[in-house]
Image 1 (cartoon, rainbow, N blue to C red):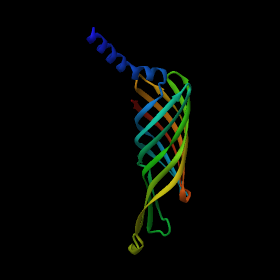
Image 2: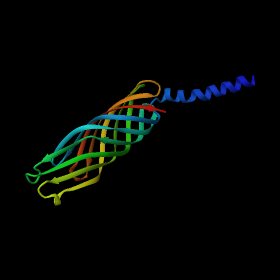
Image 3: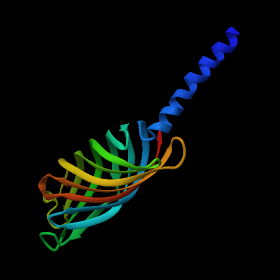
Image 4: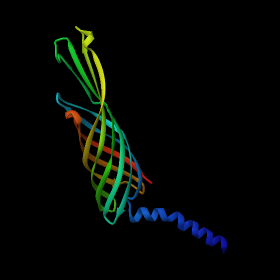
Length: 192
């Protein structure tokens, strides 16, 4: 009898996290991979590329309302060069580097497996610039800069199983020095 009671207690304890996921499916720690379209725009025009990275967060669900905190590390292959920038013998190239984000999101569970949300937070992007003048090499330079900014966005998250989910998201980031970014990303994640 004692063994049956202990087995029943272990069974109930093991079932508790699954029960919590069923009653609040958007609660808990999550990790995700992200990939999508990246459009970086500065004073001299815009460039398109591919953004990719990872994210993590923790969400709380109370009824149909969901709130959470999140962070991301993203990178991009968005870059571009302009010839004859100042003279007929020069060129300038700009490259988007890593992008860090930390913020929060709020949303509503519109079905037991679908969440719509809005997000906002702080972002920091690194950009690189290379200037080359073949006629006067003394003018050549290379620089990297970290730019602070604000990100806002909205998305939809869809559960694909007990812990697996997919999401689609649009986000806009506005950085210092007149730089902005539009992104449309998809993600595949796992909620613990």
